[in-house]
Image (cartoon, helix red, strand yellow):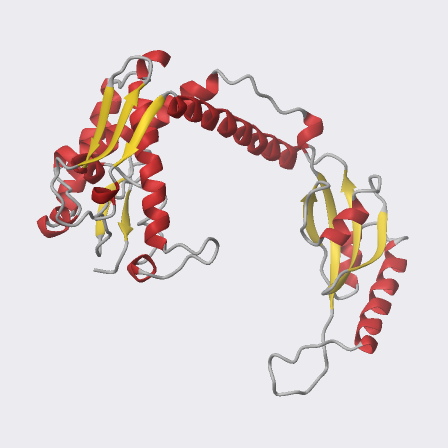
Length: 336
């Protein structure tokens, strides 16, 4: 996991941003600016450019990218602090190998970045070690928490079918110079449908669907699916889902094309296993978030908004060793 350190302007390291009080033990946990410097937002600086961060709106919720990043960072701060606090509950400890990987990553970071870049992100060796420590704790705690989750996925939940299909796209013969004028006429759609119908008729007696498609100058594509799939189109999925193995759909119309498909398996084992793992991860994530939510309810959490609002993201470009592999990666919010 590569580390992305945040830029926090000129705020003092001991400025308290988040204060958490355990209701049961009355133990107070404070998160300071120094901790903000140390912590990593896992989802942000490596994928979003400085231009996006500085002020552009995120179309999905009307917030700026910086606001969204800060919101995620604040939640990460709370989660990481809670996970570290509950390590004893799950008998989670950092091994010698963990500590060596953390130290190696910190040394790599120190060597790979100029002093100017390190100063910009408070990237001292001590701070980088703290970031890596929290990230390793997060990984180990998540594994421990989901291990106690009583979740499973049945074959029936995950089963994926397989089809081969040929797509006949609607095209227009319009000679309009306007590239936006791609409206397909009813006559053109009729011609495409007739072509698809002729193919479907021949496919009924063909020994091999894919070979027959090639003979007809087209190509059969493969797709795995279940009733919730939308690819290659929800219309062809709905039609194929009703069929048995070896059966054909006939011509299926959508807004953009006609399809002819053949169901080749009612249980694609490889795709089913992949889906099973995906569903299992979803259920484990749900349980993990439920545990974190419970812990948050047990605490009094105060955000010092005056200090928090002063945090901003400057142009950053730092390199950090990936502790899960032997390589390095560049986490960047700008090209500088």
